[in-house]
Length: 115
Length: 114
Image 1 (cartoon, rainbow over the protein chains, first blue to last red):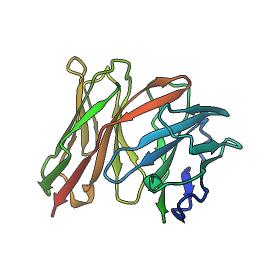
Image 2: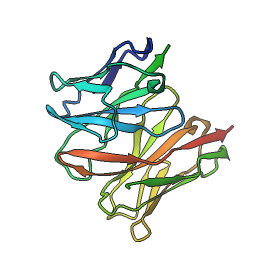
Image 3: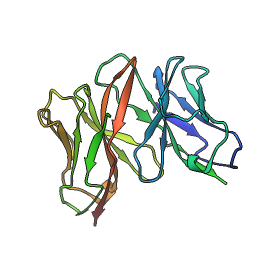
């Protein structure tokens, strides 16, 4: 099945040590999103790419960066993780163009722990 | 501020019961209303979705009721099963440039007792 795949499923890093999370998709969708989800909360959008165009949410900390080298892959870089960045990070995709009918397909997330 | 208000926060029903989850929105620019089901340790999965020109949509045991004038919509789960125990998020979507801006409700944790 076409999928959104996130690696690793679990990531542990040290306070302040840079970490990179990855996402790949076989759906050939042109839009990719990164969400942060903390325990018992709704997903919160960090940023999205439409093709190579990067769109940052106004309240996303500068500590969070992203790269999209091609259609299939997208990376989330956390430059100096703090304890408050411990969360589930979700990647999602959609296909732009059809108004009102583009659900976002989510991966199973990477759970990030900060020591 | 764009918000989608969801209630209740948690819900416990017996097997076979009909849990109902309600959501309300303010922004009339929303043009697509999906519901997501999320199991622990998994990403949200699209369950069912509706457009505002439709008042009701059924897919299997799941039904969305939509009241455009009241800006409210709800999810009904018929003949609920223990396997339906999960967190349910309503959402509202609108165009944001060439992408879709998805605003989530706060979630409802559903428990279906055997």
